[in-house]
Each structure stands twice: as structure tokens, then as C-alpha cells.
Length: 198
Image (cartoon, rainbow, N blue to C red):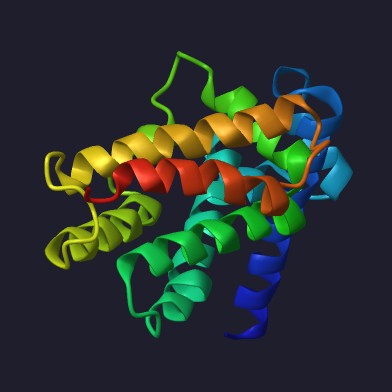
């Protein structure tokens, strides 16, 4: 990466970080592009060079999260012998990342914005790496006779994703007053038990 590309990436990162912070402080609808530009000492050209709108900032954050799933979590699952172990470890690493790296403020802001009915939610994008990872785990588990066979792997992903979103929403509205890492074990053990082959 040359110096110009490095500066461009730094500007994008600065805009993204500052915008997320402002959204947390003031609420998404109360923050303008002009305010983001002023706080970052950049220009409208620089902003629109990286983002089409304020909403695009959230899309970028989602890409960052999915990048973490693919590049950081996925390699750690490979040595595990069972699909159940992979699923449990994936959920642990996901909750640890959200709690320690994203924090409840960013998570709350993301949920707040994704509830906007004027645009399609990124949560519903079936091509997200998150859903592909979960589907692969369920397919492996069904093939090995670990997970139930009466539901498709796609349906199992839908069910688990709804539980994950509900758990994170609850954590967000409770202002991070409980630990995702500690609390997820009991909840997801109950859920996974319901997904196992009987």
C-alpha cells in the first residue's frame, strides 16, 4: 500500500469512527454529514468518496464485523472435531468480540438504524458471511448426525439468527448491564439442545 492509499484509508477510518461516536451520542437522525465533516476536519468530497450516505457507514461497520468472522473466527474453528463444538466456540468468540470490541453503544446504534423500515436491513442479507459460516456448521452437523434432520440447514440458521438478534437487542436496551460472554452460555446451551438430533 503506497502513501496515498494509506492516507485514504486513514481518512475513511477517521470518518467511520467519528460518525459512529456521534450517532451514539446524539442519535442517528440528529447527526448531519456536515457535522461529521466538521468533526473530522475533512471535506464533503472526502466523505462522499467513501460513503454514499450516513447509512453506508453502518454497512461499512457490518463489513468490518463480517471480515472479523471470516478472518479471525473461522480459522479457530477448523481444529475442532464436532459441529456442536464449532457452533459453541463460534458463539463464544462472536459474543466476546461484540462485548469487548464493539460495545453496547455501537450495537444499540446499529439496531436502532436497522429498525428503519425505509430501507432493507443488512440483518436480512442472506449473503452475509455470518450466515454462510452458520450454514456450513449446520450442514456438517447434519451430515455427522449431530443436528436434527427435520429442518433444513437454512431454517436452522434462521432460528439461531433470531435468537442471536434478540439476545443482542436485549443487551443493548439494558445498556450492556450484563456480560454477553457470561450470559450467552446458558441461553445458547438451551437453544443448541433444541437443535440437536434426538
